[in-house]
Image 1 (cartoon, one colour):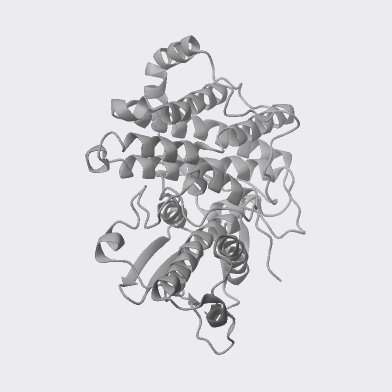
Image 2 (cartoon, rainbow, N blue to C red):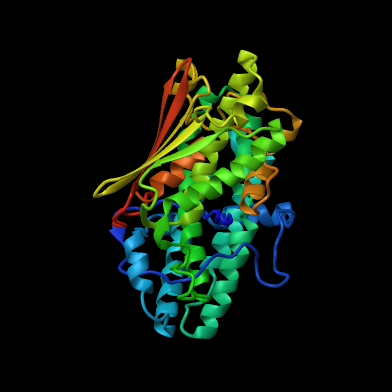
Length: 426
């Protein structure tokens, strides 16, 4: 039976050399804020307030940016949360997150302030800056956490911030897309900036959601916060297949044949929502390539896809090593041209013709998180680069090997020890 998607995609920020000596605890995941406190993206402060806050934070940001970050591993988070979630653990976790998030936000705000004029003046990118300034301000001014009541209020604040910044990926995608219409992407060199912004966002949201879920921990779920210590790879891939198949069927009316091979019982300590998102992005691309290749070749779709003895259009192989688990997704979708293959992980690159229904990357990301089956098959070129950042966050990687004229292999490598420190840029 296919597991249900729970993608509350966690996104956060980069870090330096030190490792945290502890961290958070068990539970499943949340997708909405508390009560009626769901702040929307329209709650923008008046322009004069924005100007004052930007001027006021000049030296404050520098102070927080200079403080070293304390990075964590999946293993540390699991071990910290094993056993009963005591009041002491709740307070330790809250204090760690309270200290860590402003330092990470300050680094990203500094990056935003050094962007070229054509980027930072874009209304979408400007909105990201405003959201981050507001989050930084609220975290910085939150009093020292001494009691469980303080922790309860801090947890509500984290929920608010997570919900208020849900569409940051969409805003960045739209903003950079608009800016590159005025200045060539090669001159703006935005990939490094976007990687830092989004990798940082992954990390911050992992920390925030891990602490929030610590309060609703249950030994019955098997989860430790957002982490499953024995995350079954096949279950996550099946969930991604289900989502990608629904999107493909909505778009083309057909679903390519997918086949599993290898170690189907393989598991590792991982964040299932991350793995599901990565696989969804890869499979969505593979299914689109397969279907469009059939159309290009003038082959009838339905008979081929339904015929039982027809070889699989997409093959998934799972292999387990002592330190690493590898997932290979192979398709017979014609492959990428040498030019396209070299740009596959560039933000904004897409081989698709974007129609009016596919221009809202934010809508796509939000729909994915909300378990909606109507995501577009292609968007503004953020899916695959973002998937690679999720893979790299805890020491993995994503690689594309294409045979032009035949198909493409995508290799997802994941650390199975849980000892890789989160990858966050300073």
